[in-house]
Image (cartoon, rainbow, N blue to C red; front, side, top):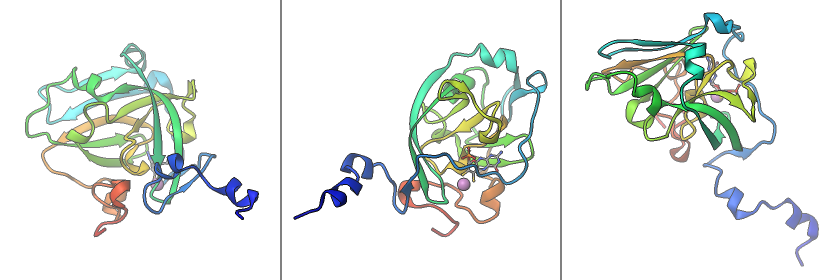
Length: 201
Ligand SMILES: Nc1nc2c(c(=O)[nH]1)N[C@H]1C(S)=C(S)[C@@H](COP(=O)(O)O)O[C@H]1N2
Ligand SMILES: [Mo]
């Protein structure tokens, strides 16, 4: 006989299959920040695409709000082993942002940069085709400052450190330069399904 209590604690396979190796499920939303939460007023906020582009582009907050948005419901995995399912964001696809700039063919790598100096690197081909977005709402409300508001990058298919909070821009590069955590020993790529946690994994 299998007790009711045992069955009650079991998770359906549908949920289990959404957890990448070594991860556990959370229902809360932990805060992980390497420094203090910046509080940039919206009238001082801007978003810039620069580096290997024909001409850099900068949006003000008001202009950024005019860009077409999409709702994304995604599962997020942090390298500290928590996974949160079905997180619902409103954001601007990186594909939409890319329509405004002409990236040099050599600019195959992206450095996302944030208020406070945080950076993280992602290959450009992993930010296109709906794979990444700049979110400014979560659960139908403005994104809270501790979670990266006014706006953060979200790259759901990579560990959450790639989702730069307080994002201010994307810089296009010809080399896959390591960002903040990548320089401190985190994996250059960070695919949770391959458990790319630390350099050498
Ligand atoms: N600017 C900035 N972005 C950041 C971080 C940070 O310290 N600064 N931490 C990263 C890490 S390690 C994780 S796990 C997630 C945590 O996001 P959360 O605090 O909203 O859960 O943000 C990522 N983006
Ligand atoms: Mo993290």
